[in-house]
Length: 462
Image (tube, rainbow, N blue to C red; front, side):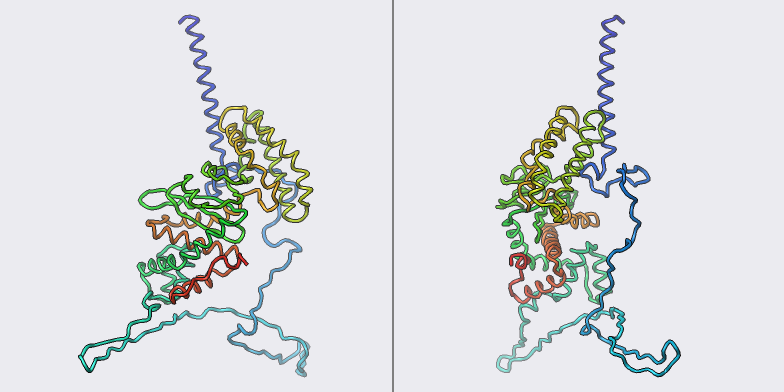
């Protein structure tokens, strides 16, 4: 082999080694990905004994589990006297000194309550349709059932319990059926439970539409999405749009601009979301989630060389910025002071991103992608009503994630509508501090009687 051939072969090997080194670095980066440095959920993390997470240095000793010294006690509150169904009065017979010479005092009696649940027996209403005979023509006649009776075999209470079990607690249909049969003593089949869900879907149609319109009219809203199986191996998506007092869900076949447009509709407020490309179709003001940015900065900080140092400083700046914003929310830092401190931090973050974007590889690509959203990074600095993170939507959509993990998603359009409406009801009631079962019971009662179903958002609108 001649000298030129050797030099060409060596050059080829050097290129291959460089490629393999980049490949190894990329695979190591992927292997290190977890919920702390990427958008992966915590449930996907390796067990701590297999792949320990890097621990940040602690400034103080970790707290012991359980109640801390000096904490405010949380004692069980006694039910009011009108809630007591049975009462026993105990009178002392002997003093601790041994004397029997006792008389009543002016002190209030000590109270101790035992709460129990008796066996549940459902209320069964029976309609007897007597059959009479016409004396003129000899025909047999009977009085038809009232309209609200013909609509269902189960009353509002049963429908509400079915909604709680399958929609709020994410219980499987067979387990929910077992609870309804054994705990509530209501005879029901799987088909009957499916019919209950269909009635709930119909009942919650108008409140769902009102809630969606209400959120679209707000000044600030959060958007997010998560995977949702649609049966027959088809993948779908569960979308959510929420504000401080309401949340709405939508099951869609795609994670596309079309789906995002259908969810957002005429919303023209400030949208808080992640950097997913489908939100680019939204022409209004946006705020990119800084919780996602913080995880991206954490991933960049784990790189080698100058890029890793850039990531470390970005990660430190992200923590400082979020801490300052938290102090504003807690009232320990004035809004004007926060705005005065931010320009220096904002300028430094953007300069570091520009430096990181000059490199090659996936991590430098993150810097370039973040810079594409430069104008959406600092909306929370200009408007005190805008949160820097999308945690509100992620907390809301978590209920759908738990449902997905315990089921096979939905198999039909009717099932998808039930998921949308029952999750919307549960999340909105929770955000407003309302009882879900009381709302469902009242909504089903009104629907069965042909009355207007109460709104989910009328309290928030007052």
